[in-house]
Image (tube, rainbow, N blue to C red):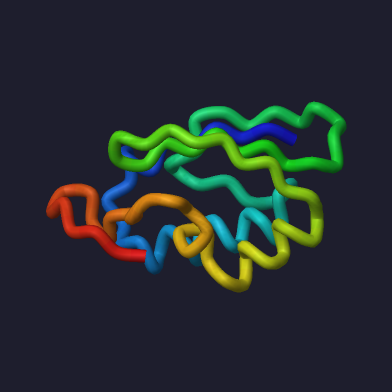
Length: 94
């Protein structure tokens, strides 16, 4: 499955975003949110996420075990840049 996510269109706080994406990572076929721009079932067991947050554009490929880990830990912790808590404040966190 491939999903394109644009976090910049959702005003929610990072904690909500991590919980929301965590639910999708647990239940990819039954969960879609307002930040999703595209969702394609490509038949792959690997979930490809194209994520835009702030000025960063990243692609993450996750197998089932990695999806479960990120769903529990939160995705922002695994990024190599500071993920802002709020998009409109410019405050870094995560």
